[in-house]
Image (cartoon, chains in turn orange, purple):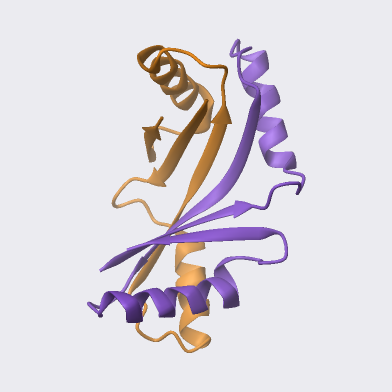
Length: 78
Length: 78
């Protein structure tokens, strides 16, 4: 089974990479872009497990390694 | 409006970052992890536009800057 994890910076945390991309889009002619924020999209392949167990395991992975919960939040999709 | 863009490496393209994270998860005790692949999740804030126009613009952004279409594919969600 495939677990999809979306890791995004929390609101209020400065995102210099997103700012740089937003600026680059502006110089390329996409003047309408108001803001860009960049996060991570992680696909974790697991053996088939009951959904609640898999979700609990992936949550542990997020807390332990995949996300820095001080500045990032995450969302899991199974 | 918020456009969500998911950029992932195409199948068959080596993902050393994903391999490293998969290995790290293994050493942390998540032995069940079979594979990890890492992509980008990009949120682009735009003024309100008709959905088809917005999608066309975001597609242009992906082709021009957000994704390297030689090795990456992208998906747009509006």
